[in-house]
Length: 320
Image 1 (cartoon, helix red, strand yellow):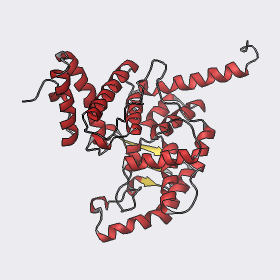
Image 2 (cartoon, rainbow, N blue to C red):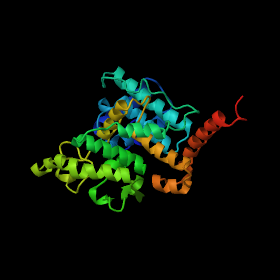
Image 3 (cartoon, helix red, strand yellow):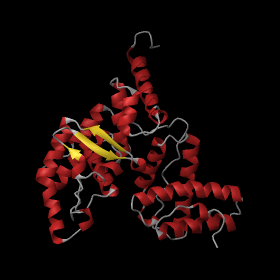
Image 4 (tube, rainbow, N blue to C red):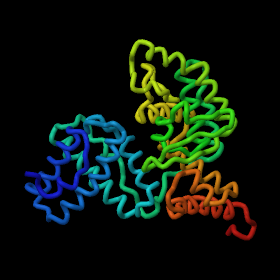
């Protein structure tokens, strides 16, 4: 019989459910937490398990620090209040600390991930020059290099979520018209423009790089993906979110960018740069696939902070 709180956990791989349930049992029997507190932990962990399941993570042992940081960025993008995000991250960190202490995982990936504070609403957007450094760091004509360049150009050109990018099929992409069809949360469809530099990078990957990885399909590998994913792995299957994230982090290191860079960094940068350039917030809302303009408005604070900083540094009557 399920203990109190475990019934609030979502459908997830057996390994995730087993360990999350064990943690809730620990909180109930050994920590003696109240039923309301157990429910709060279960609801917060339910968000985390749902997200991990979407990333095809089946065991907590496969989770790294960068995964938890990306999950934090996803919570920020959702518009969740800072206090609610902090509570969720605390639950996640304590879960991983428990699993590591019990010997269920080799490391504690949440140990160095601080919960968000009131002053941290979104991960910092990259500057235009930083984005250019990032996109310029991928050199060479090997298939993997062509794919990474095309992926990063696409993410910044469209503001796509990483799940939308790796879920993109050839049939969803029209390079001649410069548009892509993305499927967001709830399978909601939207069309987004694809700029010329991203089109060039995608064209180079599709023509010169992708066929090399696609050869694996001829041998019957990854038959389920024969509909034609745009971004393939070396075995001819659809590129995973984790592999896409790894490619971005490696490129950020090559570019010498300090601090944490995630796929959401490019999405945040996309939105921030559009707003700084004078784009209407409703247009940005549509491009990002937000159901409510309230979610998009979090980017106006980032833009406002930038404007105030520039004003303070440059206006002759603003300096003291």
